[in-house]
Image (cartoon, rainbow, N blue to C red; front, side):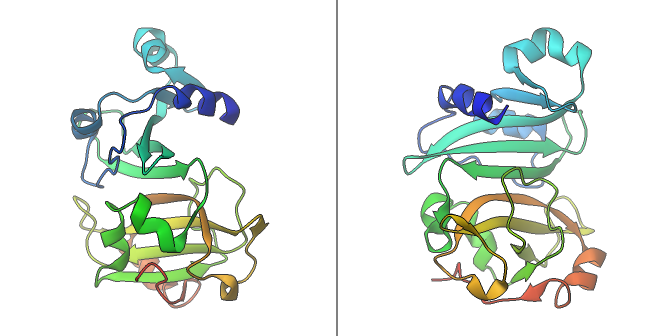
Length: 218
């Protein structure tokens, strides 16, 4: 299905040099107002539907799981999958996954994702690595080690949670097995933005989530 999605999305770019970053206090309504309709709907059986198919028959047969957009940033095409708390129009963004066509280096993140970058380098941001499952929303092959940034201030619209940015990281052509191999030249294959409960952060940060240098800072 991944190949089919790539071919379809390749012809349905959202906008050249668009910014497709959804805040966690965005809703289906505000996302549509900012970026227009999605190009694909993925149902709970992982079946893709074009927007037209979904509006005419898909919604009668299945339940939506996520909504796919595609855009370009500095000549790099990025697929964005947005998940919501519920199917209601005022439902908040629960998580989103960004998958660029090519992996990018940590040191180049600001160039391609300037709208997300301030979250990574702010005063409340803590950078860490972990061998534990950090996100269930990765779709590419995953290294044994993940890297994350948690912003220790209330997530927009969600006072009991923080914003968690999880990175599926790799070396060039290899998976990363130990945190010591992570640096500014590490590749990011995909990343997610989602919520993390404060209690989970408090229990894990500094323990199973081991602090590392923030290589995003220049």
